[in-house]
Image (cartoon, rainbow, N blue to C red; front, side, top):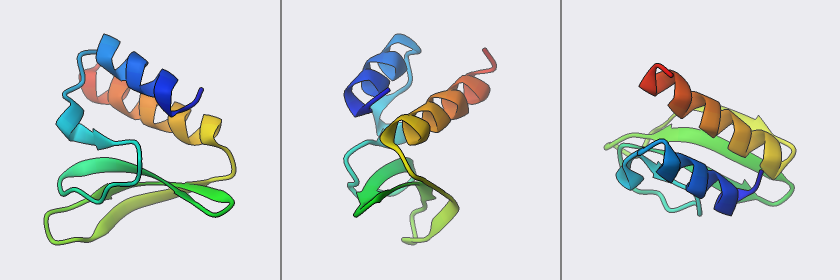
Length: 77
C-alpha cells in the first residue's frame, strides 16, 4: 500500500483528515508519515512539537499498513 491508497482507505473508514499527515507535514495533534532518506517514520506529533510513539519502517507499504491498522484499532472495527 502507498500513501495514496492509504488516504483512500482512511476516507472509506471516515477518519477525519485532521487526524493524520501523510506527506510529512508537522502539524500538531496528528499521526505523521514522513519519508526520511531510506526509511519511513510514523509518529504522533503533539501540540508542543514532540514526537511520540515513533516507529521506523524500511518500506512505504509497512508504514502505511501500520497507520491503517492503528486507525482500525482506534475505531474499534
